Amino acid sequence: MTLTVLHTSDWHLGRLLYGRSRDQEFEAFLEWLLETIRRQQVDVLLVAGDIFDSSTPTHQAQALYYRFLSAVSLTPCQHVVIIGGNHDSPTLLNAPQALLQALNVYVIGHALAPEEEVLVLRDAQQRPQLMVAAVPYLRERDVRHMRSGETLEEKAANYVQGVEAHYEQVAQAALASQQALDVEVPVIAMGHLFTAGGYTQSDDGVRDVIVGGLGHVRPQLFDQAFDYVALGHLHVPQAVGGRDWVRYSGSPLPMGFGEATQQKSVCLIQIVCSPPVQPDTRHPLEITLVPVPEFQRLRRIEGDWAHIETQLQAYKDEHASIWLEIIYTGDEVIGELRARVNALIEGSQLEVLRLQNQLLMREILAPIQADKALPDLTPHEVFERRLESLQVTPDQRRDLISTYGEALQLLEQASTERASEP
Image (tube, rainbow, N blue to C red):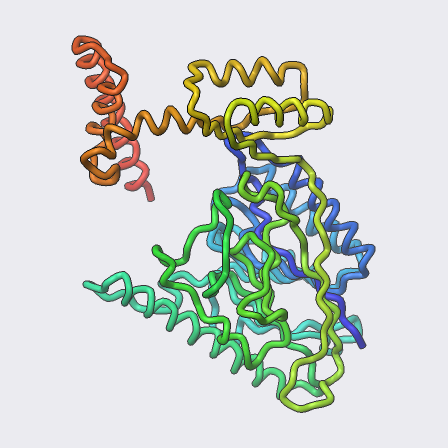
């Protein structure tokens, strides 16, 4: 018997792009995912974390999520397994656990005892079909005790050691559960983490587990007990460490303009459920990357004004809705760059979400970088040097510095109040 499994992750429902809502894109993706489940006759859907973009998702984002899960119950899909990611609120994900389990939707929002993270999925006749080791995003408090005086390197090493120990315990729990069954079934692991050798794109919003990239787990961790490993956290679709059966499905939508031209996909796995011919080998499987359509075109234009003008005109002639990021890198001083761009795209379906003038940025940073690195300056020093570069008169400068100081105080006060909230 062959089982069809669909692996996806990092939906980030509710995410904004430079202030623009993307709810229509998310809704279109979930409709497409439902149709893919029907068309491919998917038996099991795996969602490897970061369902939401925020721990406090909007009502619209939650409505999309629950409508989708309700609709899945009307498809051939027999089981859905969801784990929490670092963006998700474990409490929010876990709240409807009992209700969702009635729909064969299993949610593990936070770390449990290893044996509780091992699920045995059964068919309508209650025969075991598949075992899923569903490990959510592991926070530091889940896998280790904090110690005072730790260096960054010690902190990262202790975290990785704790994560790897947890997965080893889960693998042992899966093996024990396998031995208790009457029949051998495939074992799939799920995780939400950063593996060594994994790669990201600019502005995709991926947060490193440990600052500095020191907390990346070794891909060898997954070599022994699992037939397939469904990972989330990295937004670029990729296999890990040369292991085609250990994969990030990637985010289904581009999270930023750095991913604008990247082909997004979900992983379709056909796995043979009968025991392997050779002992201590994996169940045979076939992996297909199913391309996700582009629901809203994002494009980045980078160059001098001649290039920007030519590219804008080309996009305008396509008469399509395109969200744009424009990065001006020319040497010509253009004081009204946005006005020029707006005039050129007037009457079209083009929309500029971000416009960056690197010439202006270079002028701002030049006096700063001449004698002192930017991170070494206080906010007041940066502001004062900017006023100096603009040749603001002393009288105006005093008033602006005073106003800026008041603004900083208000921001600091608001930040303190938020931190003190329960």
